Image 1: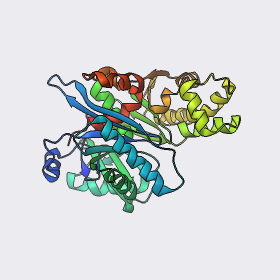
Image 2: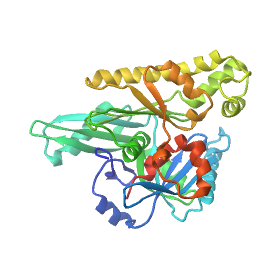
Image 3: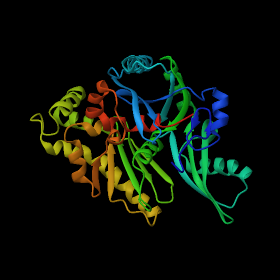
Image 4: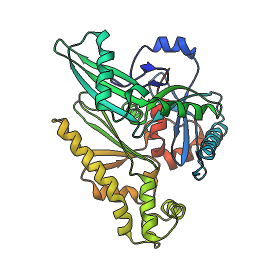
Length: 366
């Protein structure tokens, strides 16, 4: 899509750039990659292929649960590595070249607008802007950017920054499973990329996507000027489960099991407990949307496409819909992606909305 693509340092390539140079550098021009989405409770792997008509089809897909998170960091990393290996085995995939994503407080996506600059001046201006706008030390981070508009009066675009240690940690984690990270994306940009590749949009339309995971909820917005806005909200599925557990004296594991099986109307609790537990998330979403529309004067958000693993907890989508003013649409990206292999249809139908980030990552090309 315009405004999102593959430029930057080897470990953080999120914006359109010199693809040929990277193909030559990594010697990957004809080698297939796959999207690898590592969440807090599960790992999702997806490989796609685009046909001559521009439509994507699934060539490999798998999902594996991560064993209960341990307080021991080393053990937790082993659990994640084992889940990645399980995905590789389930998918029966030959490629070991992954496109991964980043999210959280150590990742930032920001617009920039400068007086007209020469191309050679943009890098230093973006780095300075990032140091002032991002809530972490830019000297210890990777910064990438794309210019969206360059006129005689103004140079504008989008920058992405991520703490280098976060990038290196994910690369090592994936490498421990025998996989090479060949491209690092941002989860929010992957969501927008997936939507634009499968749906496109009408002129002037603002696209808003909410991906609800366990440790993080990502709100990604694409304005009519092709400028992306991404905000990661830390109060997500895990926090909602913890709040319900505290109010009911049930274990978090038990609450999670009930939400997957019985849903929000379980006799184990009063529905108001679930509604209250969701209010922090919906409050953060509302505040973020107010901030965005205040900054983008012509923006109008009338619908939100909802995806992510926690959005599949029975009844959670309905609770969120009742607490937010915009129309909520449960988004399954596989509705616009072909599934030619019969054995994949079950996972596509049951867990489609949980694969939105993985799909966006799988659509990136080296």
